[in-house]
Length: 297
Length: 264
Ligand SMILES: Nc1ncnc2c1ncn2[C@@H]1O[C@H](COP(=O)(O)OP(=O)(O)O)[C@@H](O)[C@H]1O
Ligand SMILES: [Mg+2]
Image 1 (cartoon, each protein chain N blue to C red):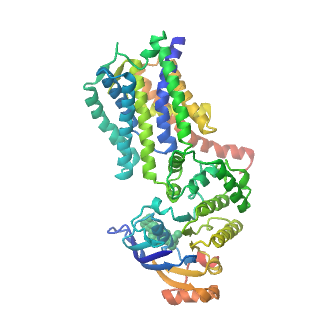
Image 2 (spheres, chains in turn purple, brown):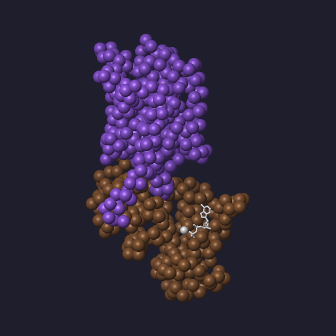
Image 3 (cartoon, protein in one colour):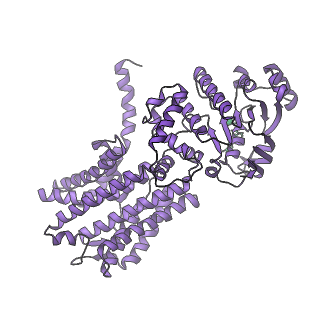
């Protein structure tokens, strides 16, 4: 059991990196960006291929980050410059990336068994694989939380937040909303690809299919984090995201252990997200009831 | 300060929904002019302001601010010299961000944004004083999310944001129309105060004839996408509501028939 929880925590930490990326687009920019489905697999593909070719795993992971940023740039240009709706821009990038990722991998998947990965350094200190992943995952996540907290407090970060919150107001205050959306998408997809590279190295293979459904997993983690761990201020929100991603993995590990077939996982996740997203509708049905109880109506 | 030459604007050109919103608009605003702009629903007032601010491109014509041709400039680029307050109190502020964060965004209007921290301690002092001058009790609520404020408070804040960096041109589009009469009066007073203190070149749209007559040094009336009256100087000072309605009838060949204007 402990082993299962530890495994879930380690995977959750790596997915937390992806969840923070999804949060940037979904909550800060107010865009549902589907390109992440392609960029997470792209991160895995670039990371794996670079490592196969003998590159230092940290450099390979950095390459994955850059690749993801380029994917975000593509979506950003489709949306802001070519005026294609955000959802469709993301889908176009996602589909295009499927082919790109196949080209990067050269085949449907690459195995990284017995290759040096970013975790090898930690394993050389005597940690087992799962502890090594947790250690590096934790370092990565805490570093990124700090970085994002700083960035979204800067002038440019504030301009991105204003763009997502009220683009008309942002433009009236002299903010180039197109550029801010591109920048947000670039950062977001970079993080998602980084997460993909870290995940591929922890599971010792990269698969062109691994992005399918990832946006829903990201959204599920965002929502679980917000509902369970609060959204008082930005720092609290970031920590809540990380805990949300870990909680999601623990839930999945538990339902699998309780006997749910792995093939039903995506159905389960989709339903969880659908219910969570529709909560406001149910609340608005409940509100009049509550009010009439109080005798206000 | 503002020069508009032969401005034309159609919406949905070449379709069944084609709508000529502005026709041959010519306007010269001197530095310090405070123009009230009045006209019936759909006369093209908001469209004119939006064309000046760069929200819409124009079909033909020239818009110049302080001698610079800005016709081809994007909206955010023009924002460096234009302050704006909209009719909808929700539109001028970022509701998920704090009062001080909104002001800090406005404080950087027209400047390069960098990776410096988004708000400084010194600014907070400035904001506290300016908010105090609104007399709405906002000076002690710098961190409060703007979404929690009332419409009047948000509109007053938007006004402050519009003038925080002295704009070469202030555009007010029925910025008190969505407020209750008492709040509207208060926001209008604040506007008048800021405009006078800063000697701001201002174009203020209003539906209220009394307001249009009482405020500003010049009054412009629009009808069907055209400017049909331009009254300034002594003539403007002597203007009455009846006189204005008569002149509208003569200029447009129609009865002035906008309920909203008549009732107010
Ligand atoms: N974005 C738009 N698309 C199409 N038609 C528009 C648009 N904005 C305004 N119009 C039309 O242009 C005319 C002028 O509108 P507007 O400038 O909003 O009038 P006003 O502010 O004087 O009430 C109206 O007939 C309106 O329906
Ligand atoms: Mg209007």
